[in-house]
Amino acid sequence: MERSDTKFQIKLIFSQLFRKLFLRNDSFSLMWILTIQKTVQYLKTKILYIMNQKQLFTKLDEIEQEIYRLNNIISVMYVDLQSVCPESGKSERSEGLSYLTGLVHEKVTSEEFIRVVQELMNHPDF
Image 1 (cartoon, rainbow, N blue to C red):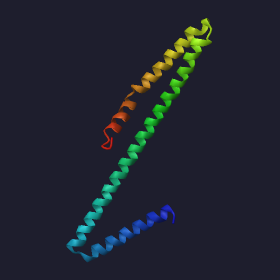
Image 2: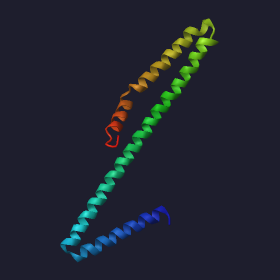
Image 3: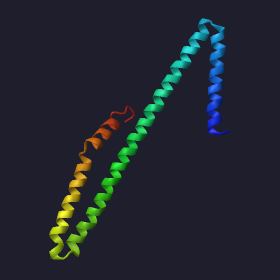
Image 4: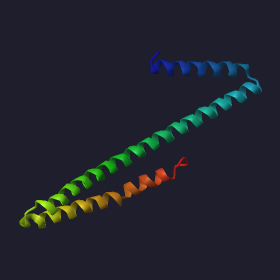
């Protein structure tokens, strides 16, 4: 059974259940209808929350990957500067290192990075 078939089957079962309960028109049936509606609403809320958390973790991972790449480039340039870089190229290499270090600092202190981290830290499961 495919996923779309499963979704269809679940919708069909819920609609049949609602119809049977609604046609009985007693207080017990109405209580079940309300309970099912509340459960469905709760599940929708949870799914949206999980999707939001996944998006936040994806964004955090993207930013961390960018910082990681920049730090790797900085490491290679620093080793080059200290070992094989000719004297005439040291000032340019130092400027490049300074620029890349500034980019890393901007990424780590950016509003987007701080917002994502704060939202994830406010998660009740943390």
